[in-house]
Length: 447
Image 1 (tube, rainbow, N blue to C red):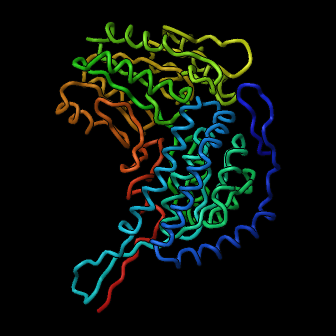
Image 2 (image 1 turned 90 degrees about the vertical axis):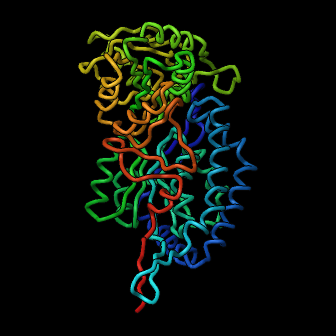
Image 3 (image 1 turned 90 degrees about the horizontal axis):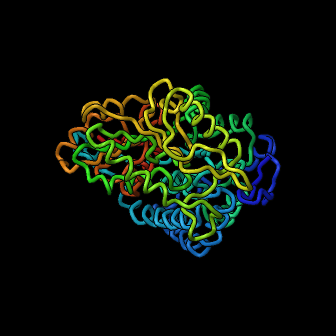
């Protein structure tokens, strides 16, 4: 069952039954035919269709932002930012695709040798709930630019906004939703030519194993537990502000948020009060209220999991400096929580915490801070705050992550590749590197 619930009131917003593979297969077959016609278009023609979609999305973005706010629970201003960035993403790729996908002639002993970028066919995406517009388009737009067709299996809890997004996509683009259950999603993987997945590491392993058994190309963007390293010479006031923003935006429900605050002992006692002062400014409330800066969590079970992780940490000796108590009343709110003295016996040391909980790890020195950053199964991103940027770059080279930000919290930029290593997945999205993930890089050679 696909259904959307108002996160604040608990009222049902939208319901629809799951499709069986037998019911969906004719739609899938028609999409494969549409993909061949779409791929035959010149890349500039495909880009023009994407520009038209960007215009439609821009016209409907306020309505979609309100839907995301109601269904996911994020603050309305955060949802508006998601829609703005999604429109920008489409226009970015529509503008650059003709250049990035142009044939590349390479000098060899042949009279003519080229590399061309050709579509794989139909790409299936299994998508999460936390950014229900951005996550879909982040994979789909570059795949469409290259001439692929896209099938999207959405998260069950954001069905209404997904349906509204596909109303805007319309018939111009070969892209359809797949309202499938788990077992039928596995059949869709077998039928597709490639798969993109964003979500938990556990589910990613299961889907990637199934795709691998059928030799399907995959890109996985999985969990994250990003390190935020505060070196002794950092601007502590700025680091405290940025840590608070990165950890608690979107109610902490972002894979790319700062989650492990690694502070060198030399400045820990000075930094922590600054960080707590920033946390104290956060205000819980209705996510549509402009004054709200800490939204509710998306579901009751997600809040329960976060609270269990906090209780486990305290039971193993971590110190809860603020928050950590389950609130009463309507809505799945959880207070901004800060855990100090976290160590490997605590679940949060090894697990991703998908909610408004920050953990503080104390490092003996700069080298130890890097060791702690790497002592995690995840490797999505990291941030280093230091006035000595040359030294920060040297430390960054030793961090096992898909990205390292210096004197800024981790985020994604359309122009730069996004993805991780280790249990955070593989492959890249965004930039030209994301565009090339779902193409056949094909060699031509003429005597």
